[in-house]
Each structure stands twice: as structure tokens, then as C-alpha cells.
Image (cartoon, rainbow, N blue to C red; front, top):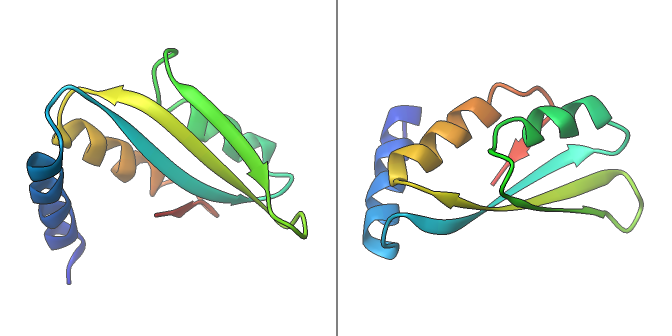
Length: 92
């Protein structure tokens, strides 16, 4: 499946699952010690978000959970597109 098709599929799922604007939860994984990458992830969002960081059991990775109010499915997809440009960031 192409990247464009994946985003179209996600858009359909978001339209069917949420009423917009809506709170949406993003989850990312970074290697530990990548403070500059954590800042880049933070910069993707407005100031009014909830962020939490959790280290993996071995301390190799950090999971980042962000709760943010999104205006539309397109807004969510735009965040994912920008996040995909950050090297070493795992998006799920």
C-alpha cells in the first residue's frame, strides 16, 4: 500500500471514529538520549497539549504520548507527515 493510500485510509477511519474538533492521542518512540528529537516532536504541536514520556524497561527507548485537540482528520495527518520527517522517530 502506498503512503498516499495509507493516509487516505487513516482519514476515512478518523472521519468515522471521531467528531471534529476532537482530542486525539499521538504515540511516538525515540531512542533514549535524543533530547533534540524530543524537542522537534514537541514543536509539532501548539502549547495546549498534554505530553508524557516513559522510558523502556532497559532504558533504550522513550515513548512519547501526546494528547492534543485536533481540528480535523487532515490536521492529524499533517502532524503525522511532519513527524515522519524526524529521523529516528518511530510513528505508530
